[in-house]
Image 1 (cartoon, rainbow, N blue to C red):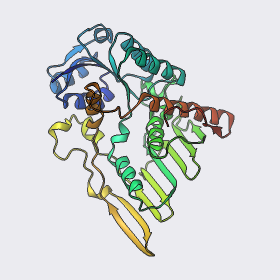
Image 2 (image 1 turned 120 degrees about the vertical axis):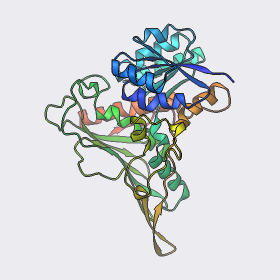
Image 3 (image 1 turned 135 degrees about the vertical axis):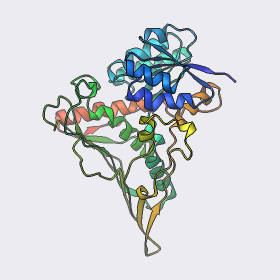
Image 4 (image 1 turned 90 degrees about the vertical axis):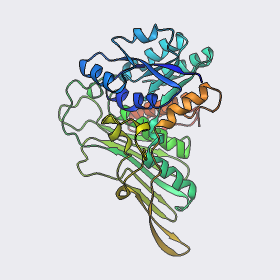
Amino acid sequence: MKVYKVGLIGFSVCGQAFHAPFIEGNAALELYKVTARKPEQQTILRSRYPNAIAVQSADDIFDDEQIDIVVIATSNDVHYSFTKRALELGKHVVVEKPFTNTTEEADELIALAEEKGLLLTVHQNARFHSDFKTVKKLIARGDLGPVVNYEARFDRFRNFLREGAWRELDLPGSGVHFDLGPHLIDQAMQLFGAPDSIFADLRIQREGAKTIDDFEFILSYPQVKVSLKAQMLAKEPTPRFALYGWNGSFVKRGVDPQEALLRDGVLPHNYPNWGEEDEEIYGTLNVVSDGVDRVERIKSEPGSGQDFFNNVVEVLNGKAELLVKPAEARDAIRVLEAAVQSWEEQRVVSLKGLLIAY
């Protein structure tokens, strides 16, 4: 069996929680080198992944000819430059979302990967969350009838700013809209395809904040209105998903359990029943069926973050089609650009002819 050596650039929360555990759990991947500059990062790396080599610089990964795959789990401002450099050196690339900060950059990288014959994919891991998988299955099941309103949100409560956090600085790719927007947009387009237009509301609400910390995107489809939201001042938990159809509604509260476990250092391949939600956060379906009201708790599908890297290996071995195509991640960036334009110009912005994957 071919084992692919992986170089992981970035070992803060993203690298530690969302990449290293799933790489370690795949027998066809070797977590070979990791940029771990801080002493606490080096301690975690030694403890959880004793066979991995800690390096100080991304150059130590780029310049290593043994490395097959570069995983980029850095701040958004270097996604483009690091991905470009890795591709130019003949390495396959997994880059954290958002893919890039502009559509132009994304288009350039897609063309470069095609020219080089290399795998390029974006870590849109929210596709593998328990709640979204449940919503997707429920829509396909048809209990709701035609869905007319779809609401999805990532709400948090943090009424203070994290000192030194790049996401909260006024930088390209910063702000909650570039952090969480790509997840919500990607999920919506997986369900409904390319929207016709977008109207956006982008706000800075917390005292001293320098970049967007509240947003709402309204995506318009011929038969569906999609509302995507995120904020930092939701002390009372809000529903993750709410769907309204001709036959009734479905409301899902609670969050996918994978992130909390990953942040605590749990390795998925060592954890029984990985990704399974507690019953108390199952969603509620309330519909009319044959003239009779029916209320049902819908058991959630298990979250499966491991599917992403499993797919990467299958694609490299010629056994599967890429699940997260770079053109799809590129389209999420194009929608984000249109959202910023919508807010600046205070108008609905058409998306017709601007998206390439859907």
